[in-house]
Image (cartoon, rainbow, N blue to C red; front, side, top):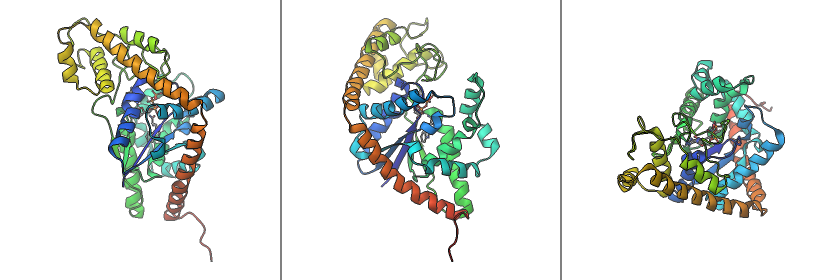
Length: 333
Ligand code: ATP
Ligand code: LTN
């Protein structure tokens, strides 16, 4: 039996990029791997690497958990929990910092990008964050970690940290493998297709939130930046806007990009965008309907309590053993 683990930060809203790159993939894997275990957590400690308003953060944590369920996650087969409710994450995160080199953290492109963008003072937790992420994963001996393209480098570092520990103390942590979708691993900003669609962006025109009014989402697709070439083809270099829209279409409809291109080859951008705007707004609408029924019931807290209890048992045992390995813990006479 394999164990699949992933997390999502409760910052900003959830975008269609998160949905296509991570959530949809997680749901599909769950269907394709009926014998395996799925652990999913809300990475609230990671959210604190940048300033958060307490009431807003508290609300987002539940919102994201509810959205995951609304997107089709099977609550019977998912250990769904909130990271900060399992203290072992932070403790192992610290221990793993002792096995992570400054040079490795300095090379992380996400840190470099975020530190350039940030207008407030940088926290040290933003810098050490990959060690906590490694802890999130290897605490549970994850075999696979489904993530979007932007997390690949953090996964490589996680593998290095786990292997380093194993080399020093003998085989102890499972070295995890990332699962990155073939299509949709990096959905781009609708207004600037040279950058990743990001929920922490200043303006909301470039991303579609899963909470957007369906009609607003449709409008955003219709006003997405394209080019003056005027031909529908998959050319991310010269037509990044159209390539991005084709990717969104392909992922939401489970249709190959080739087949979409041939369908629209004789039609203009307007027709293509109009069809895609319907697909996107329908997808969002059906997710939102499910979301409403979930948040209006007590189901969510029950699922989160159960998830916490299940994760806690595994995390406690693994951390205790880890501490013993490295020489912590008193020896009793
Ligand atoms: P931010 O944009 O604020 O940095 P984020 O959306 O990258 O945040 P998370 O919410 O933790 O951060 O991401 C959750 C998952 O969604 C990760 O697996 C990430 O790789 C994936 N993801 C995020 N943005 C995109 C995107 N534009 N396209 C595809 N996958 C994405
Ligand atoms: N770093 C990720 C969120 C995250 C995560 C994880 C993903 C934190 N811990 C463990 C997979 C596994 C991000 O910023 N998107």
